[in-house]
Image 1: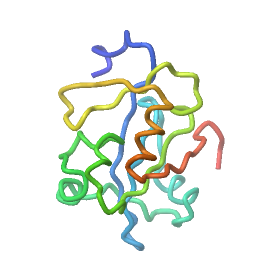
Image 2: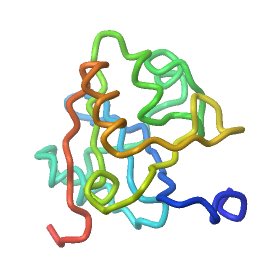
Image 3: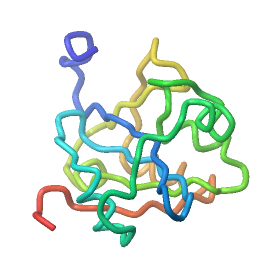
Length: 139
């Protein structure tokens, strides 16, 4: 995808739909596309204990977000009507000075950009208060 969007002014995201294996909680993590993420570190920073976060099954993603593999993004949270999915955002997406943040709009055959403030407004309107983590700092 990157060769097709590298000319855009802003930051492309990668998104992971995750499940905490002990507490059975669901998480959607949106980060810069070029971030290397260690799920054990992310779990510790969220207070879940190392090794408890896993990629959730596609069937669960279809049930909660109404999208399949490769299509889960913050924009799919409007389908999470019971607000059972917690949102984690890379601090760089909201405070990195990007003109736009790019997500798939429910399908991975398209990409659209939102201003960071518009993303935060969307999350608030869908009752998904994000947890913002600074991945530039070591935990």
